[in-house]
Length: 329
Image 1 (cartoon, rainbow, N blue to C red):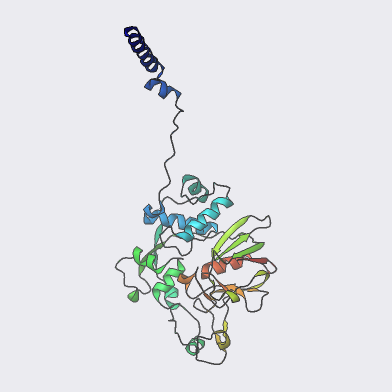
Image 2 (cartoon, one colour):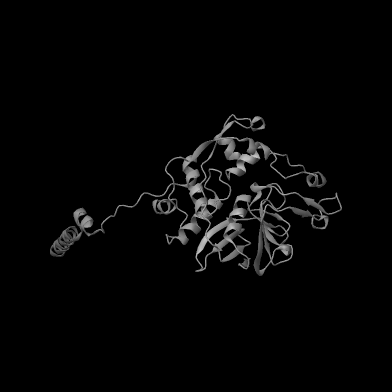
């Protein structure tokens, strides 16, 4: 019995010794681990980007033809969609990251996001008021802006909220010719020739393609609230009219009770079709500007496609009669 116990003790000791020598040391573990590569710093979160940098990205995207919506100093859904589309069009990795590659491709300015601007007499003359009565509208010489803030925001492609942030303490009801404001430093837009359009009704965007099928621009739009009034299939551009007047037909405005006769509404930025009308070969349908730019991207039109006035004018310069248009649900 003593011999058996001795042999058992010896066996346990040998096993313990083998386990100690077989276990890898910390040095062995480190030597066999894969080499650690330094990861690039992550792009900043959209909600953590300072106002000036947000403006720089939005200004650059707009210059390149990828609309961020109204310039508002926020990296929101419209801006991120524009960034994704730009990245893909330039062959960058599919992402909505505001990284160094995208900044270089966009040539995002590192300074000078805003500039001082002095209101001119011509600016002030465009503020005519915007009556709600259709008969009163028809009697005006021109459908100008409702207020000075309305005029300045549209002139610099921005929201009135951003204009107020940049001019804290300014009472826009008292702004007049000769007064100075701080405004976004928008840049001259690129206007490449467009050979086809695709309207996505779900995303509420108009994509523009060149003759090789490359995406060269993207614009946000508003569409009809009533799905039955949204076109399907395909159409063609018929003509582009700058500074159009508008025929008010009460049959097309059931929510308006008076007047009950047709009226001609004079041209101007607050005309119902804004500063540009792009007619399609679908009776009554077109792409056009709007008197309410802050509503772009929503439903509510009577069937046409509304863009901001500056985007409608820009798109009109890029088109010719006969350009095909496709509608995607």
